[in-house]
Image 1 (cartoon, rainbow, N blue to C red):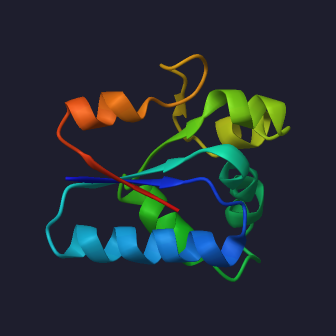
Image 2 (image 1 turned 180 degrees about the vertical axis):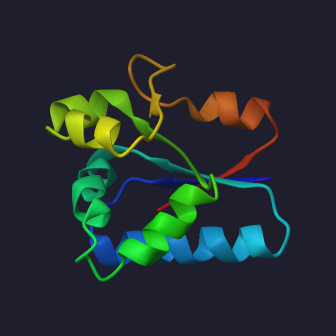
Length: 113
């Protein structure tokens, strides 16, 4: 079981999170993606059909690979409404942020990007 924590707000970096997550899922691994920090700002761009990585993102989203998005960072960085409109789960179980400990307690190995 793997949880891919994306912190980096660079689109090209996040594409690799999506690619690895989908690859792991297709190989039968239990995998989750969490968007934290600056990565939350990618949601509005990736939601656009005109974004070159929209199809990849949408595949990850519709297969349930994206487990959630940091609520505190989404609010602080001005994308809370966009994340809600995208239908993504807001995670806030650790002072407004997603808890890595909660994932490790479920048996996940954390990989950060």
